[in-house]
Image (cartoon, rainbow, N blue to C red; front, side):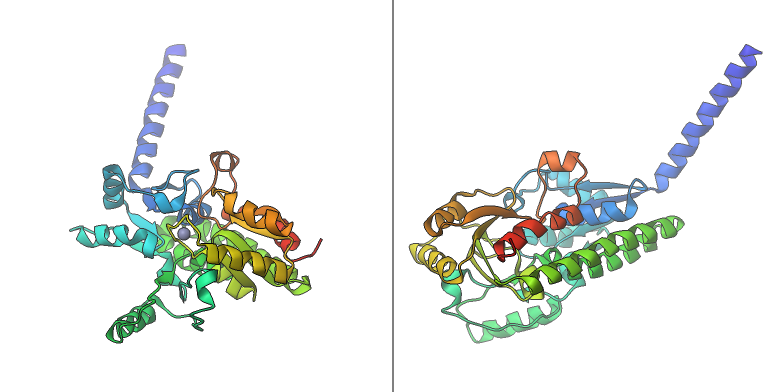
Length: 331
Ligand SMILES: [Zn+2]
């Protein structure tokens, strides 16, 4: 009897192992370039696909350098999800050079993009008014500009995910793509996407509510400014030391005094820095004008502790409510 039982148990275990292997063979292998891509894919597929990210958790996104291992991972992916733009130029070149290209989705191709703006101290000297455009339209205008030898040719701003309104569109399109590669889990993926999209609708409502109630409409960053899409969508005026993905860390005396002057003029109680970035510049401005330094999450990446706690992009955006209220004079 016992012998029989052990035999059944053994065969049963073998069968489960076999099934597991058969299922895994069909499992999607999705490789993502950075945190926004990872977070969105994870939210849709949960544990029904293998999801990895090239950027390391807790590191600064703009200093990322791909390793040979990363390149092999991209080649083997059943879907590669990246952001596009200046910070990922190396990626486009690499994928172009592959003989067998993975299916690719690029965030900046999914929504209308905005041309990158020069930092605050330079901006008032070259005030341009740009509208939203597709990456295709941008390329056309960019080529056109070259004919006329424009001096200040800024790249398009790639931080499309910083506006929840863009996130809603991106999640819809990303879900469609994933479903097209794995029809068996269609219902599961679509339900997960709907739930996550609902969070971004709520965040959109709350950001809008905060801005409409607030007595102040200006935000000042003693840091990079990757929040063009956020600021424009909610009608906020903004000043910053550097543009979106700038590699600069040295700020000019002109920009510094310009930011201090603006902070005084607009009476802002908070000077922002972004996550995983040095607070020293924001501190200098804040001390000068008697303001407080606070972090605004742009969602470039998470700290290791946040990642271990399972913090998502939507959580990060909700964490912005309080600092945003403070900065706009709602407390
Ligand atoms: Zn960036």
